[in-house]
Length: 126
Image 1 (cartoon, rainbow, N blue to C red):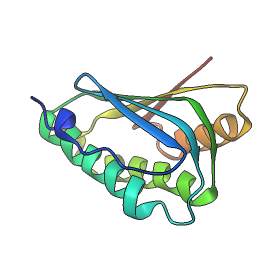
Image 2: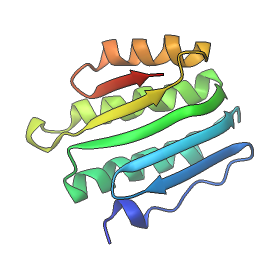
Image 3: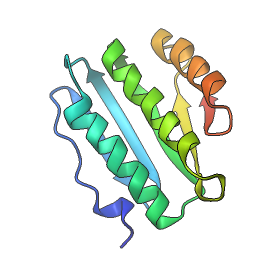
Image 4: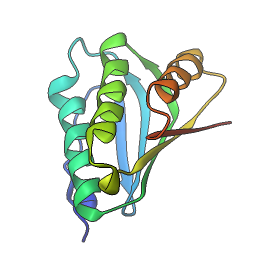
C-alpha cells in the first residue's frame, strides 16, 4: 500500500473527500469553514509528503463537483503549489486539476494558480 492510500481523510461539514488509486483525489460539496488550515490544509500537506514518498509524477485532483470555496480555502491550493515548487526539481510532481468551467470560482482561481506555478499545476476544464 502506498503512503498516499494510507492518508486519513479530513472530516469537514459539507465537503466530501475521496482517494482513488495511488494518486487521485476528488473533492465535492462546499468548503466554507473560516479556517480550513487545520483540517484540509493539514491534509494537503500530508498528501504532498505522501506523493513525494511514493515518487509519483502527478496527482490528479477532481474538483468538478466542488461548488464553492471561500478565500481561506483557495489559499490552501496556493500553499500546495508553493510546496511543490519549493521541492528539489528532481523530486517534484505535478498536480493536475480537473475543473468545471461552469463554476466561476474554479475558472478564475485555477487559472491564476497555474500562472503562479506553471511547472507544478495543470488544468483540464470540462
